Amino acid sequence: MKISKGTIVSVNHSRKGKFQAMAIKDFDTQKEEFYPLALVTPRVKGMNNDWVTGEEIPCRNSLCKIATTN
Image (tube, rainbow, N blue to C red; front, side):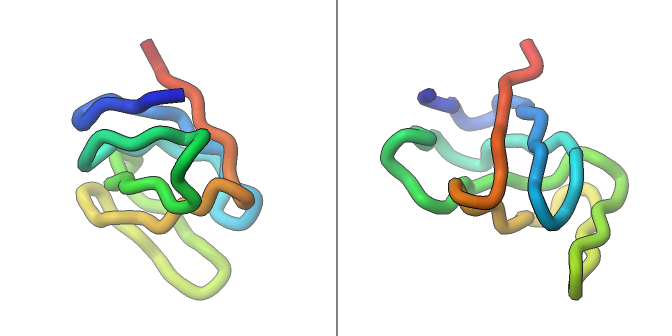
């Protein structure tokens, strides 16, 4: 699935849980291993890190599923 910059997506991450993020550049989920996303949800706690709104959050293809919110 091709995601355009600025698109809000729902992420279901196996380690970080469910949250919303925004694409910070165009990418294709079929071709890329890491997704360029910035957090929209107020706060996400991972296993060892915390992220707040606006921070880039690492999302790997093999660890999460994304869906557009539109």
